[in-house]
Image (cartoon, rainbow, N blue to C red; front, side, top):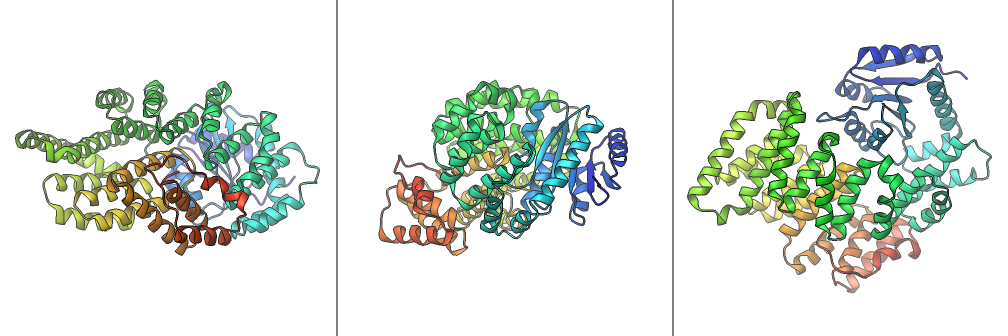
Length: 516
């Protein structure tokens, strides 16, 4: 098979690894190979060039590792759906970090690998893209229904196992994209009975959308799932625990996970869980233990300092009105000293966090007008980051600008809906849940928010999200003609039948969150 037209990128900070892989690829007849020693260099190139396959070093213990970077490039459509992502690592569990993208094929390549391993990847990728060329074209143009119909035409084709897997994965993800969860479940169940792991994870996501949290919890508790996917199990168990109002279980998950195996995003999530569960001693202990593992890396040390100061600032802002004046003055002085001492490193390695810290410090010093202006400016540059926008919403709440606080919360919800279902989604979702409950404290206010959000989502053409928001309104106790009309219109516009959205309408105990 000829691979002269394949365009391949290698992203690895080790030049020996790059040379070795380049040599093997050249022997396979690949002539278009570009290598990058950093994620930022690859990011610049990816915006100018199209790659068929990207080989990625799978180190995760950096502020913005390649897993995070690729998630962003998929999210903003820099990498087309035909791009295959190959994560290279020694441990099978490292595949945890290969995000389950809807249409991009991704796989783990165990190190050390052989020429035959590479030959298999090249052959399978080439045949897959050729065989499903029309479907991929429809996907790229966001014509998901046409892509689904094209793949259905191929269901009776006799394919080798890897092409069957690729076809079935595309079919399932297209059904999920279109909101046809019942059909997706019907397709997945026979595959899960054969213990096919990708199908079991897809069924997990279907059950999540169907609000069957017991089924989700059961899958995450399976020994094989816990053994092969410890990281995914970690963040999803936390999220499901919060959805089931079991904060004790979420805290237990954080405390039980080996701290040396926590990536920066997992560490952020752990701090947030302990913080909102008021586990102050556990927060301090987690930070001290992570200091020892981060001390050799200036960027990670800066991140740790930023997160430590951030938690202390948020705690102080929360209880500012109840603190004795002298005690508050001491805390304020300590925080200002800590921020001044670490300012240059935090600004260098974590500029967005630094800007938020400065604004929080201004709020502690009652400089509300200046803080509000800076918040507005910062919000314009972080509109795609649901975590940052949620924090900005909360800080607007502290300056008593409720209109902007609520606007930012809505923007964060929209950004969250576009996130891949990974650890960043879980972190942003839990943050949004907590801040929503603090900004909308009264049940009637929450109900009004559901209706306002649903109407705005409908107006912007986000019909499936409108249906989800309508279901929240129903479960909160609203049941009027305006809501029923909006639900019917959005279902019609989304092309859904009753069986596709019936699960959203099942009444249950009201929850405080708009994130689900």
